[in-house]
Length: 406
Ligand code: PMT
Image 1 (tube, protein in one colour):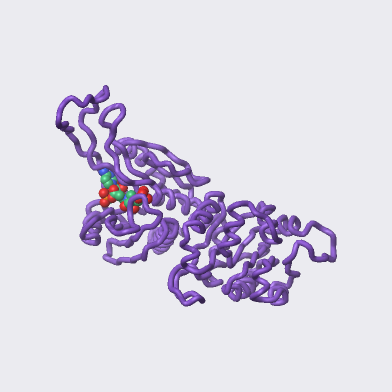
Image 2 (cartoon, helix red, strand yellow):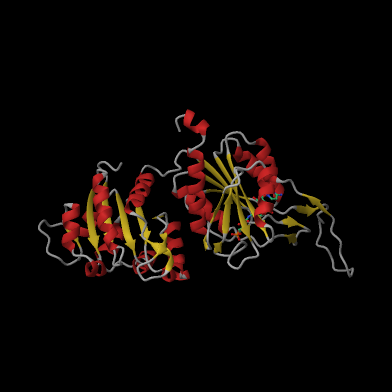
């Protein structure tokens, strides 16, 4: 898969180092040339000799070692690489990368690398879930570094949760997908995010608590996987992920027009936005004065954008979200049917850490067949990654795509 690719592997100090040894072996079996940089902490776990033997190349570990041929080694390695992969990437090294600290061979080289950088975080679950680590990962992802999500399960420290280094075979597959332009390259993904706002008068509006975090995470993940990505967003203070084309809207009607204009040639449409179901019938041209004790606003129904997309659907894979506070699965199933969806992501927004404005969510992917894939509470980035994995798997098993040779 990786024939003639030059992979520079950064190895940090964590118990998962043993898997990095197998990773080198697998990369070489796939045809890649591999050079390894080890941090001082990695050397406490495995000797330099192990990586030298398995990679067939000298291992760089110190900025100050004698070198047989004169060159500025971290720059030479940075220029040699087609990709820098850091596995395992510890919380400490992620923090240094996020801040631009360059105080050893690996972090100095990382600053000099122009090639893609792929990070495989692996650490204790609490360290991984710590907001500082999450914010560092978000910063790095926003700068265009590819993050391979850690696996969940039993960790060496005895806890259960996210933080395991994925199996080397899976890491190799992700590296290959990414270097080929991503597993979603050639696809157009349209994502909606945030809440719509419906004006009452020139200074007031009816809105909801959607921050856009869920939809922005999905758009960021789609673009990292190589998809042409359009984000139709209601008002949100979040930065648009690099590489994403953003269309900013305010009202449900504006969102409908923007989405319909992007729908015809879209391959996947994911509707994470919280669209207002009603709007004010007669918007006041002037600011409403507080003269009366009560104020009555007449509301009219907004268009159901997702229902309209379901009606117009041709080749598109159509995904809705369901924000529920009761009867999650039953209500979501009704929406799948009514809106002709290929999948619905159901979140019970009354649960702690789920739904509006949280950094985390708790979701179930529900299919028209009745199949349900449930996720534990996870960051919105992790949910975005899992969602796109589910969609990619579903699309690749579609009979009509097979017949087109896709
Ligand atoms: O933005 P965050 O703060 O990260 O919060 C994320 C979220 C809670 C907003 C997100 O996870 C979510 O649940 N989004 C859907 C919210 C919603 O409006 O759900 P609903 O069950 O009311 O609508 C069902 C689906 O129909 C949604 O895909 C919605 O976009 C769509 N819809 C709804 C009404 C309407 N008039 N047009 C629509 O297209």
